[in-house]
Image 1 (cartoon, chains in turn red, blue):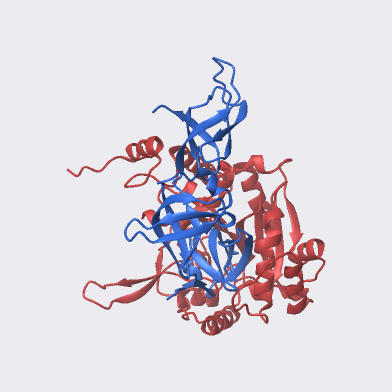
Image 2 (cartoon, chains in turn brown, red; image 1 turned 135 degrees about the vertical axis):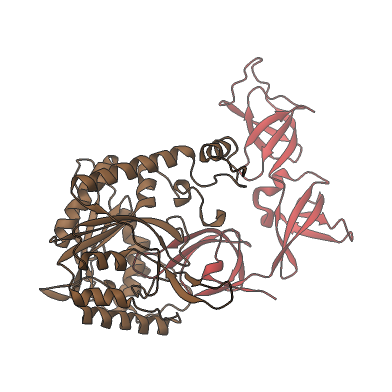
Length: 345
Length: 190
């Protein structure tokens, strides 16, 4: 028999010593118990709403091509050298959309996702997503469902049990006095400078989205969702790879994000159904990757086939479960809610 | 030769160079919107004057490392302007000015081993041990039997510095002090 210690044993060791070395460095036992309770509650929420739990592969031959997401690459059959190149998914989106196209109806999944190079206070390269899809709902209806779930799981983060919605455009107008769809990069640069952002290195001054990301993530985000959860919706179309465009304003796409206590918790889309348009966006993302000096990625052909065969009208959302546990625990770092952070695997 | 650090090498404790000055990275925050580009924000402390700056980078950017190295040295004496350190291997001596030391002179006792940081061959900062033992030369007498630690009084120690101590401390006591915060930790029984 192997002398493997039980999880309980490992947890006890870490609580008494607080040190690493085969023990639990990240999450203390209490955080893991809280994590389990939250996950059980979430599953009950989905079950009560008739949403089916599914499991899909972590490995895939093609991916949802995104300019800024890098999936780790594996070699299958590499024992003799070479082998087939497979990706570890950056989200379960492609596989779940194939199930939607197959007519499975409302589905959810608790899945691990992988993103290279993402490590920080709120990031671990391997993390847990709760992702779900709702045929027949638009993005505003899905935001309300997300609101119901987070007020159930994080009641302490909403003073009155409610949530707010604010358009991306309104957010920039209210907080910075600029229209993110109209202002040029010069104005965005001035706004950043006024807010005390000191840039180093070779920042691409012509890239509007980079400026908008910079302003949102370093200056606007920390004030979002401190009273109650805040949904920011209708993002620039250039920042919404798989969302449909707003019918009345095609420069915007029907994408939303949820912020609680300054933390980005969810990203959702009113999903794009057009296979040809999706293919064009993947190609464009690969062009941008090449000019950024990143490897182009193989698009998921099976996803594109599924879109061609017909995806039902639907909205979908991904929720960062580790961050949700952080918010419930009042943790400063994602390491506090992970049994073994990346450096410990 | 100084090295170059890419954003993926960024971490707390790196020593880097901006505008010809050496800086210590005291904080490194990685931010990335789920679907957006990564931003790195560094808080860096100027090793020459202690000034702290915040700098923002995008992934793929890089910075030059500062040509710094640390050496274990023994503190030997001061002439009130400069504090002198000696390399125990080759007996070479280096002087660090009181300004460069900041508050650290308060904790330096003769013969103590310290880490001296050199930049381009010149000593710029000193890191004493985290905990040092200092003897009280003078303090007001405290109330006998009062062992409270939340009421404090100043005590002058052998280096000439004043440390806030609990009122039960008396002349001749030896204190353990944290050099990073300047706080009294406990009385040491020798």
